Image (cartoon, rainbow, N blue to C red; front, side, top):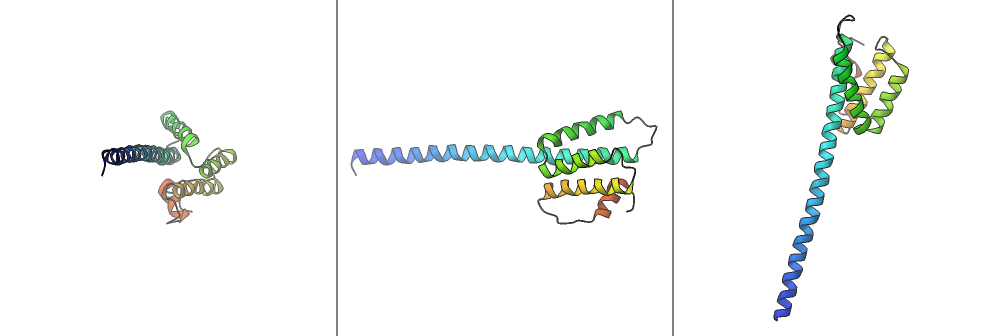
Length: 141
């Protein structure tokens, strides 16, 4: 091989290595960003469900301001990071029900929880609304 060919091969190898490093950096950065968004989304769903379950079980005269503040925070995160299907179901539930004071409201809320579960897991592996309702509210269907 001539000196020019050796230099050309070395430059090609160096260029390829640099290009691959750049592509790898971009892909891992995007992957980390997606993972962080997924984590925030899932945590906002959990926080929301915990707050609602807490508020549903608390005594009427008890101070609910801290739980309501946490609920508002979780709703804000859902509005930003939530799946469009979850946002639609939650907004529809909010428009239709002010409280979890009827069978219809409880059943509709369980549908919101199942939508969150579907978004977090990726598919419905388990769908037993009565079990979800029991876990959240301790109220048999």
